[in-house]
Length: 277
Length: 277
Image 1 (cartoon, chains in turn purple, blue):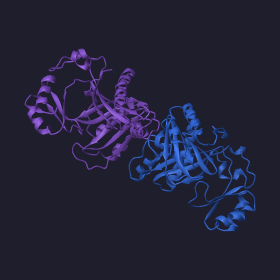
Image 2 (cartoon, chains in turn purple, yellow):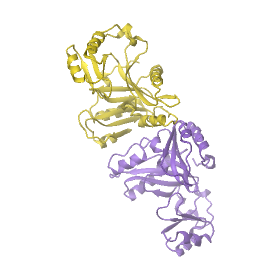
Image 3 (cartoon, rainbow over the protein chains, first blue to last red):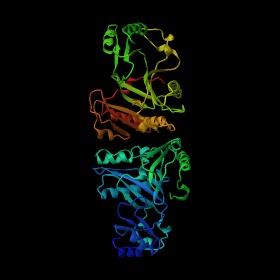
Image 4 (tube, each protein chain N blue to C red):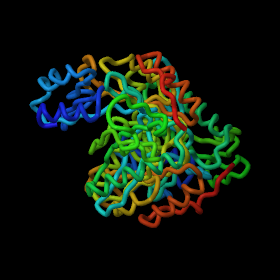
């Protein structure tokens, strides 16, 4: 979307609601405006029109997943287990790793997508890909825009690529304690020409972002398996000032510990999400 | 041992061989001289006599263990699993964690010793205690010195305290990847008045010191579960310039990976050690 005419044409094609975004440097919902009715187009253009833009239609999805992938100078690749992400107000709040209910087929599908992106970009380092796990095509109900059968999302593949981050990623912070190799070490291994590290998860992890305010550190650290990371930033509304990774050897134990963290900070409830398995 | 007369009297009491040590600032065999025959006493006194000294008789032991313990301002304590240590030329080469063949009773015995030391010193922070696991008293054969029945080591307790390090310790480096909380984080939690962290081991770890020279980093990092730590020191004979921690989910897998590290650097063979279980 380079002109207001492009914007009108795109809306005619994909329908509303849709999201108008800056093509570069957006994060945490910054540089994005949701268009709900035709009149929103002019307002959004006035706010963002100075930058190169992209518009995206809404997609019904069951949950957001992400995959952290790495490629080295020789084209060797390695993939971390899929992560399930929960957002609120455009900001990642909670990641569960490995993503609950992930089948081997789903992991393989995500790795195929990531492998194609890594190869196409001749990428070296860690790359994060955000994915939507979507309902089967026949369950879709796109109100406006073209029919599902004409769209690439009608493939049997239940994953759609949402966004790519050519770097280590917030949804990979759990790897510091929860995987054999952290995403940061993996990135360094890749760019330094060293062998990629083991990506297996160690037990079950939940990564909780600390947004706008810090909980009592002592209360967090009293929870078994809790690892507190502070970024040394001045707290302000909507700002990520740290994260907590909770690790456990069993899923039930993780849920219990996560509930204790939830009692210390406000978190989206997991019950709002319906999983496809 | 403050005078040469003290030294002669001590040798008469505990016999030879014995080790004459400076009371402070010794490490890696520095500040130590082994006395094997009476004539060695004068040479050793000439070399070390300027500092306050201690002399120690030889003790037959099956293996060296260590325990990392922590105490906070409220007197709460936490103990990591026992570690088995292998030295050569007075320098730690290899630590296995948890120590193979450790019974619950042995762990409890080590924790009782550490708890007494922590309480007696009103200690806050991480403390390492090196222990000898000794044969049963009736198997001892002390050549000189007083009878075993008069010594404190005749207790049914199979552990003798060798040395205490009032700090984080080389034999605790495995905790960075191999325990839920690293010894460094544990020390900070203790001194900052934060709750002590979970000390459970995550699988099986081996920590190998890199002494005098570095192996090819790429060869080390190609081993699954290998974590390479470099200290940024100029290599020279006898100097610790880094360490490798190898982690695995099963003991057999760890031994296989450790053998691969051993093929890259010179290590003491594990077969030389006879375990008491």
